[in-house]
Length: 400
Image (cartoon, rainbow, N blue to C red; front, side, top):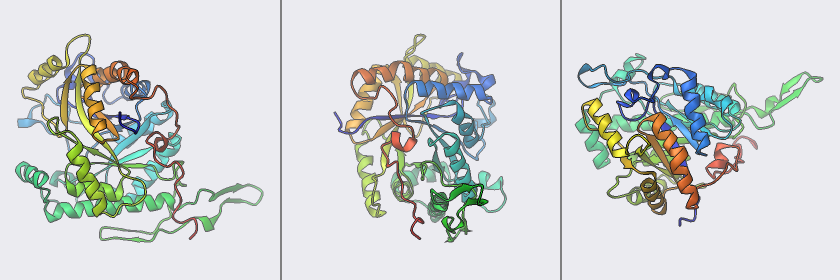
């Protein structure tokens, strides 16, 4: 058995990761843009004792082939979904995707800090670049040239990306640095709240960050006090060495996408090499492996469910992450093997959100518990605590 605890999270994306998921009987398509749908998913994840849910988002309009109208082509803002989930959850980490490319880091900083307050220390941030011309056109402030699918596949396979992609990740690194500095721009005891002395804050404990970068300059301080966690958890999804280095430089946790054939060990080694190149010191980068799952249910087996969804979609499902279709027992075997291969945790992407998240919480988790692989209760109250990260984070400006 691996010497470190197994961690589990779930990645939520609308009705599920399969494009035909919204057409399943339990998928509640009329409620996808209502609060109750999302609070129910969060309650299921918390019932399963998961570390966190990530909430997908993108500035790109979800595309359907040949203009087809049988796909969900809209989404809600992930950070605002997380804000709605914060007061109705108690232990579950909330990690929305927020892009770094067209979003001001000052706004990201205040939004995630506010989420950390409303969730009482359970906020995170999944960083993402927006690298398409269509996304840039929404804002009109810059132009970005699209990579063709073939160019993108070649770049991921070879690890050699065009200079423009490097620039986007350099900008993303600067964005994370600004956000982290802004979180530290208030010392923990900056708020005095002395009514008699008429002093709400100690001005000497607010700090300018004075960041100068190629894409932006930010003076600070933040308008929001330092978050309860000090530094909310920063995450990234990575498929290639360039992005592993970005994660090693900027993030606390990286999501990787191993294949079923090779497992996570080769990527774990690549991430370690990237961390060494990035000169990462202190806490090691946590590594979670992604899996899209279609589990057996009372109505049909996982493979049969996947086949039915593919038939509805008119094409075979493909994903950047490995796909598992089968029993919870077999999935538990795979999770245990991948944990032994060096990942800290697994992020499960439910193929059909309602059905597969319920199967994760009610079938998979009890199996892992019986095997002694997964906890039977929440022992920590913050996301950093759940992930095994230090719960006390020094403020870089405290002794300035």
